[in-house]
Image (cartoon, rainbow, N blue to C red):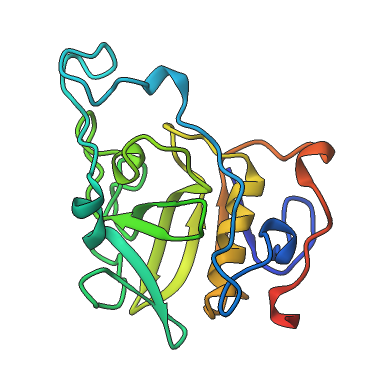
Length: 206
């Protein structure tokens, strides 16, 4: 596991990625388009009754209507839940962080984030949020009073390469959130040179 502060280049620490991860778009120019990574093959069919993955238990997959309360949105530099409350993970926990302070999240190909305080083995996973669809990022998120303090890539269901986590941070920056002090925690191995793509730009300069 590697941790870094966004905006530094030192060993496994990486700068904030910017426009190189997204197609032209955003406010006034249509939606952004982010690269995605699929659900790991060993979890396909996990939502079906009698599946092999969960000992017969079916993982819950949300419908578009059920998904809406899990949606996150940015406003005035803070991240809010679908219930219009500042995101705060102080008292939530994941299977990876039983001591608390984190929730699970995914980002879709348009940069929309969804997060859940529920992470239940064999019942509710990262794959639940987008019903097993490919994601542009997945892991854990830590926030206090709407301010994001941590992003990790810890997701067994997707195991995203580091470039996906960097584009999550880029997506947050594009929505007006301060990311300079966000802690980025990597569990995936370093990207190869061919994975990294173009040198990222600093969203703060846009």
